[in-house]
Image 1 (cartoon, rainbow, N blue to C red):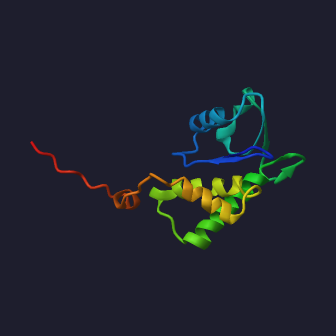
Image 2: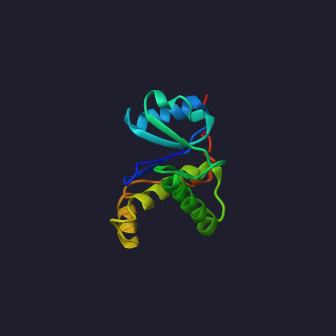
Length: 147
């Protein structure tokens, strides 16, 4: 799921499903009530007009209706897909959240940092953190218990 503030930052995360309850709770966590909210025509978004100025663009009919569009977010998803397909080739679902965290970092810092600055910031943020082989492979070994 992704949310983009026009002229601002993007937030993205892996969610369990596209059901109304989950989508509405995520929107309410990140979007201030009363804000303009533009979505595609996924039925799970129905009912958001209670708390938001919710407008919908149905991609089966059109992609833009004046200022009502999701093109900025569609651009982000395109960049993510190209990054996965062109750079990483394949992604294990277990690690999808890691790839998904990288792309908003790149997107949100694309104008105020060059590649070297982004790399430097990323490296400085790993100091003191440890990723074990078991975490990377998703095969956490069970420790034997002594009875």
